[in-house]
Image 1 (cartoon, chains in turn red, orange):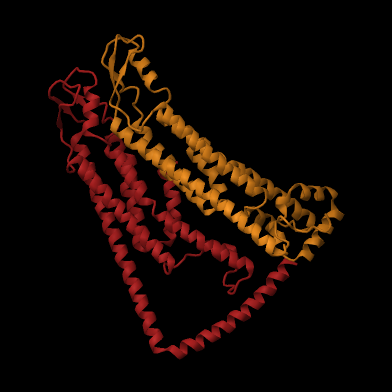
Image 2: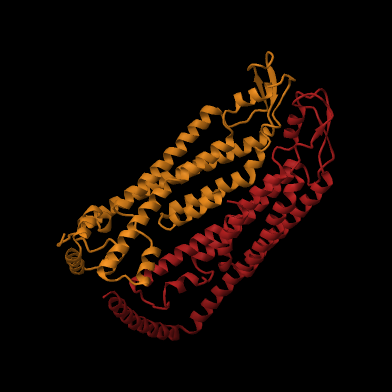
Length: 262
Length: 279
């Protein structure tokens, strides 16, 4: 179970996302996860082995490393990426639930036989409206919250985004104050700034997606209100005709199902 | 065979689980197994090489490490995750057995075309009858394993916090020696994280158990008030009238006496309380 498996799981959600959501997913996988796995993990690979303190006192290096790096950048980013990608699963679960309901209706020979077979239900793309809209918006909101929380945690723990070359440590058992040197500080600074920048881009994409969804929602609402105001009778006639059609279809569907089973 | 292999095996079970079961499986794979593989293993990667004791006595380092870490956190979590996910295979085996029975039934009733066979494979089994008992047992075992491992953890490493310094007196260390653990804070953070997700999984399992029991009682109550109809296997559900069920039963009795035994032996193929005229 690794990043590849996460990609498989989330790839399925892609079908039901907005265009901005698809862009966000691409940015996440290519510019964050891939960079983390392919480059950043190597840079931080020797972070403790090459953390050198100017003392022979056993244990001083361990203690100083632990004091300055309570949790490694790499692990923080890994956790951030896992948490940020998981809200999309809420949408996946909701879509799966809707599909399940439609399959149940189809099997019972429901009112509208609009699907030729179950495969069509499986392949169908759902529109983001109704309760799915709320689930989708909540998932984007959670993504934003997690991104912001991790950015703040990062800033709080490491006092800014730059990696210093030298740290002065006076934790026990180090005698007095000891100079400790971090391995590859510049390279680490470069990657930290890169990951923060991409994180900000993802936050912007999420905000844009949220605005897009809200705008679409309000536009749709005003269109519905406009239609209802201007064509109330017309709407009723349409409804009656649709009901008649539905009845006819459901009767024929019932016969088809019974015919099939016998 | 690695975590990805386990994921493949268990995703098949997903289809026949309740919604809570699916959430539980997602939590296990994303928040526990994935975090273990992607993050926690690298934190504990240098636990022995960076375990430093304030002595030059050969062997002291190894002995003290072994004394304080009889089994590493990572290995304990890996064992816990394997044992906790395996009861789901009981359900998978039972479902496979039921599907096999349904296919046999189809062959005997003359519906053995590839399309119907495929449908048997694809359709979701209702969690009722003997499958309900298997499912409930698997959830109980999951709970048991989670609890046992949480207890083992507590016994081996009382408290969740990883200390920076441990004092060791085991032979051959001279007197008392200070030993320093690598990355204690990061280890504490991940220990807390794994404990929290473990507790969430325990809560989900209990909720699933309660849900299953309540659903079974509700279904029983409904059965007592309504007369039973020919529900049970997939095709029994389609041909829903009792008359049709009785016809099938007669056919089956005529065709194969052993099938009658099979139906009698496997009440999961028929809903409880069904009247079977030919059996």
